[in-house]
Amino acid sequence: MAEKQMGQTFDKLARDIQESLLEGYSEKFKSEFLNPKNIGKIEDPDCCVSITGVCGDTIEMSLSIDKGRISDIKFMTDGCGATISCASFVTRTAKGKSIEEALLITQDDVDRYFEGLPDEHKHCAKLAVMTLTAALEQYVGKSGE
Ligand code: FES
Image (tube, rainbow, N blue to C red; front, side, top):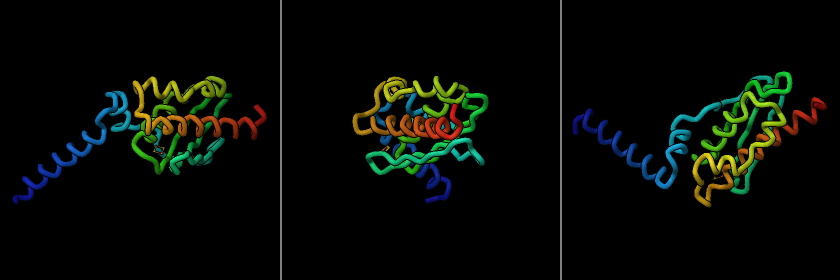
C-alpha cells in the first residue's frame, strides 16, 4: 500500500475510533473534549491541590488569585475524556469569578451544560468541582480571606 493511502486509512481509523468513543455525548461535550482549555500548571500558584476521585483518577488544579478573583486557573489530570471535559468547563467557568462566585459552581451545573453526562461519568463532574472547591478552601485557609 502506498504511504499516502496508508496515511488516509489511518486518519479514517482514528476518526472512526474518536466518533465511536464520543457516541452518546452532546455536541458541547465533544467540542470541549476536542478543544480543552486551561490545561497545565501555574508556576508559583496561590493555591494548588490534587484530588483523587472514587475511580482512582486524579485532577490537580493550580490557581492565581488577585484581589479576591481567580485571575488564572489550570488543571492536569490522568483521568478519562469526561474528566478532561469537566475540568476544562469548570476552570473556564471559574476564571474571572470571585472566590464566593466560584464556590457556587456545582456538579449539576456541569451536568446540565453537557446536557447530561452518562451515569458512569457523572462522578467526573463531581471530581472537577470538588477539586476547585478544595483549592479555594486551601486559599481561604492560607490567606484568611
Ligand atoms: S472516570 Fe474517573 S474521573 Fe472520569
